Image (cartoon, one colour):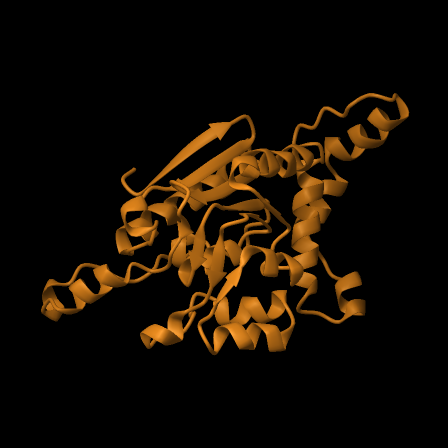
Length: 263
């Protein structure tokens, strides 16, 4: 891979965007590469959790690579390479609505524009205290079209979201935490330990229970409370018939750690 790297440790996939020379901004080839990464993660039954970050300590991802976009726009139409996103959306992730394995965003610096949209598509966001996030697209004649304009107002109060989106202002990590957008803010030196803590605690849970929880929570946001309670969730149906559904209560009764198999 040219634009990212993937390391697997046990049941965890660590995905790192490797374009630090452009603050880990993504261009079309990087988007396609990451789409394949998330396809593989979704399909691998042995991978239960993912961590997404950017190389270095300056940026998680500072957006769509606008310099690349500008350069491509100067070429004749018949000479331009493919510039669109893959089916999974920006970074192969922002339009992936059927991925119910948990993803932790390790925000190690700027997460702006498409970078924040990637982080918003994750389930847990942990940020270094020097990080800044935001959707500055209107300052470039654009909008946060990779679901940022829709996700941010669903994550924080509407007036706060509009204040940031209509001005393109950055949100400091501590303010993002106060608004409930970030789960935890720590010094950069403690970021890995903090992320590892979330990953370890997720792995202590039954993987099908985790997926069923995410599926029900995310789908339920679109429903009334009654409809959500009466909804049908595929991962919950799978969990009910799983060996892990037997293992959990048995391990509790026997006062031992459960041995999850994911089935």
